[in-house]
Image (cartoon, rainbow, N blue to C red):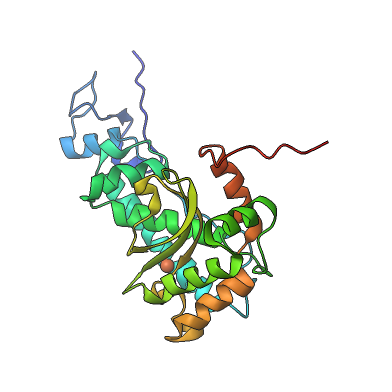
Length: 265
Ligand SMILES: [Fe+2]
């Protein structure tokens, strides 16, 4: 009788093969003339592991200069963001229950109704940073357009009022965290919210439209402790209103914001 084997790419083949034999994770079960190897090694080989990759920002690392330097991107994306991804993957290796979740589901599940599981911080920080890189573009800033601008004017009174609220939230956030423009599902309106550490508004079922990293690591290389200058340059030169508009259109598929705008013939 021929033998068969399988393994995940995460497990070195040396953990699986013993001479011409092939042993796999059935709790040390011996098949045919396979040499029995310790449970811990066979069990390890039986795991199907979920891994998340490090997503690249949608531009070159020097593309946001002079407002966000290549050096900042190399450190912030290349080291810190990478560290959250690797930390999460290490944690998930130990926890089969969280296998197969999308990132959104993983964040909600690990937030655990306000009693976060150990995986929450890494999972949320991976999501938050992906969203942040995509919230910016070279030559960003300026004004939102069309429907998003209308909604901002409706919910904040004016675009200037929105910017004041956003800046105020960034400057009054104590310690580390994030500032967000979100579409609140329940209230059916846009709002500026700030969250501490890794918290992401998905945990309250709100829909993020843009975010800004206000951990000190996001700006100290370029702005030292001048958080105000960092926030101003984000709004004036980096934020991508095109991306925000696309996110808003998608969000409106889930939240009814009122009467559809039917063109008048
Ligand atoms: Fe960050």
